[in-house]
Each structure stands twice: as structure tokens, then as C-alpha cells.
Length: 146
Image (tube, rainbow, N blue to C red; front, side):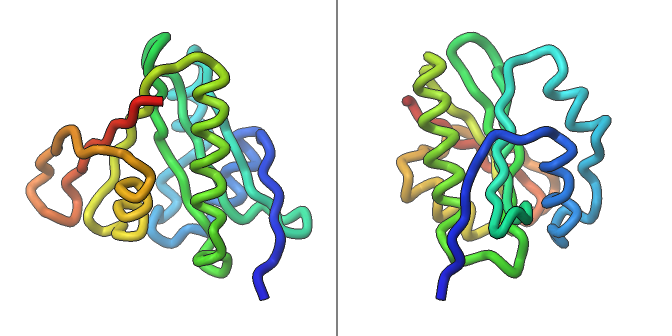
């Protein structure tokens, strides 16, 4: 049976409680790194909770007055496959639209096939590629008009 979850805006500290559960990220996301990206721009940090435990997040920030960049997102391994990532994407898109941005940009990698599939399913179009010497570490750029 799927657990019910709630999504709400959260602090960067709360977001990092989830990030520490993500094996793919290897602890690379620190408070200072997140704060540096978000300090002087409008940003949105969403966290999904199950029984008051943070289990997933999505973080993005404004690139300019028309463009929002969906930077980071993840679901704790024990909670994957429950639709939480899709719900976070929906919540982020609704906020982006309500705040008058016109476009969302996001990057992902071949090593995250579930994310690639979700982006394509939700109308994100491939807009570029950053070659990083390996198909697994190179980044695929997506964009979607809101």
C-alpha cells in the first residue's frame, strides 16, 4: 500500500535531510553550496513528507524574470515509485506559473533514466547537451514553456 505524503515549502536545512538519504548524490550537496545558488535569487524549495519525515525534495531558482531553473530533486530510495517525484514536479510547475515565469529549464543525465522519462512524459523538450567525456556524466538540457 502506498503511503500518503504532503508537499510543502521547506528550508534548505530540511531539504538536506532528504539529500543525505540519496546514494547517487554522495553527499556532494552542502548547505553552503545550496545557499550560494539561492541566496540572491527567487527560489523554491519543496519537500515531501510521510508521517512528518522528509522523503523527497525539489529545488529550483530564477535564472531571470522569465526563466526558472529546476536545479535539484530526489526521492529517498525507500519511497521511490509512489508518484512523489511527479507530484513535486507538478507543484513546482504550478508555483512557476503562478509566479509569472514563462519557461522552466532543467538538466539531467543518462544515469537517471527515471528522471529523463518523467521529463519527456511531462512535455519537456531536449534543448541541448553538455559533453562531459562520458555518456553517463554528460548533461542533457531540457526546456518547457509554462
